[in-house]
Amino acid sequence: MRQMRKRRLVWDGVVMGVSVVSPEFIGRQEEMTALAGALRRAQGGEPAVALVGGEAGVGKTRLVHELAGVSSAAGFRGTGRAVHPAGR
Image (cartoon, rainbow, N blue to C red; front, side):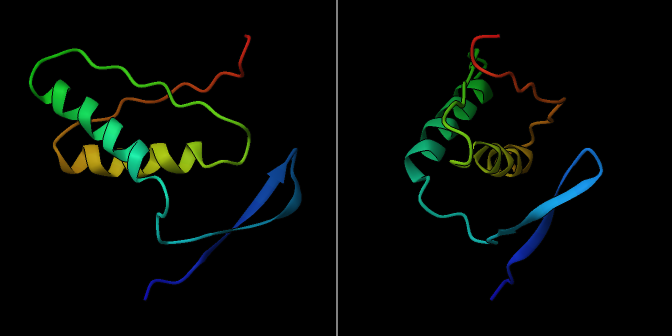
């Protein structure tokens, strides 16, 4: 069994709290299926774009992190990511 990881939340050099990150990725099968479909299309030479959005704290970063692992295993190489607040 994998253990939970703790991550310090720091803002402007001040520790604001600690978050606990589960090693298990649960409850995003529908989203991962859609993103995996975009990867398959890209592997086939078809352009594919995915936009991940939602309220703060719902797991957008974790979803993208999990996708990065899947895409890396499929031979894709990441070059970065952009995160922009809505309306900017």
